[in-house]
Structures are given as C-alpha cells and as structure tokens.
Length: 225
Image (cartoon, rainbow, N blue to C red; front, side, top):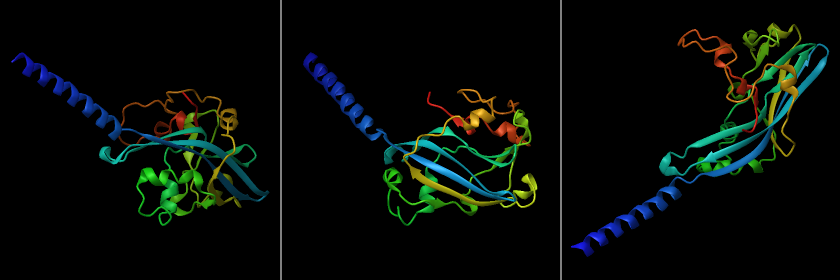
C-alpha cells in the first residue's frame, strides 16, 4: 500500500510539473517595440506651423488560449504645436498600436494580432490620418490651469485659434529618431510623475464628468518606471 501511495504522489508531482510547464508556455508573452512619429501641420495666416513628437511603443502580446491579449506601454510625450503666439495645440498620448492595423488591413489581412504587431517596426511609408483616425486635439485656455483644458474640433480650428487657422495634415510614421523629451514638461510645469493623477481630482460622479476629470497627467507624458 505504501508503494502505491508513493507512486500516486510521484505521479501527482509530475503532473503538476507538466501542467506548470504547459501553463507557462501557453501564457508566455512576446514583446515587440518600435518608435513612431506623429506630425501635425497647421495652416495659419502667418504661414504653416508644424509640431512632432516621437514615442516608443512596446506591445506585449499573449497567446491565443488567453484571448490573444495585447498590452501596450508608451514612453514619451504628447505632440504639441504652437499655433499662434502663446496658444498651443496638444495631441494626447494613446496606448494602442491598432491604428496601423486599421489603416492597412489589406497589408496585414489574415494575420493574428500578435503576428502583425511584429510587422509594424518594418513599415517604411508615412500614413496620413484622416477622418475618424485623427487623434483627439486639446488646448488650454491657461497653461497653468489644469481645469481650462478643452477639446478642439479638428475640422474647425478657427473657432479656437482665430480666422484662417486650419488643420492641414496629421501624419504617422515609424522612425529611429530619439524619443521626444522636455517640450511638454516645459509648457505644463504642473505635470507630475507616476501614478498620473487626473487633471481635476475625481469626485465619484458618474455623469456630466468634466474633461479635466477624464484626462490624466499620463495623457501628456509617460516616463519609464
């Protein structure tokens, strides 16, 4: 009887070990990283102005048995353009590489997400973002007042910045340039480190939530931590 119990115990240990190996491999993640550059060009009565920022994106992709999840990490800062003297337009950071996929579905057709993510660093063409693919645009009536943030209509910059101001293009490209650092921090001196509080302290409300309560410091700058 003792030998049988010992054998069963050994089988249980072996089974647990094999299951652990299987579970680890099934849940193993692969990382893909790239740097992307977002450039805004704006027409003004004084001529064209541009602003650009380079961020580093790391996509951590799991295997199919756990839903083929992708977790994104972005390092860098928002794109900012001085549209008119002292008036700035910001493009907040986003944590998704899906924009490349949505704009080039034919190129990546039939590939699992974990597979097409590996192709993003190899893209050599510049993509013009139009329509619903354009990012959110923000401005501050007062750079020192976090609650003065407001959305800007990409089709109507003139309402915010004056007559003759128009968004000409938004372009996205893979690059080897260094990650942009310092531009946004110089303008928004109140930006703090992780864990990135909201611009306006959250108070538990579930409706009519002000924009400043929906945005966080991490929408403007993300540093390694």
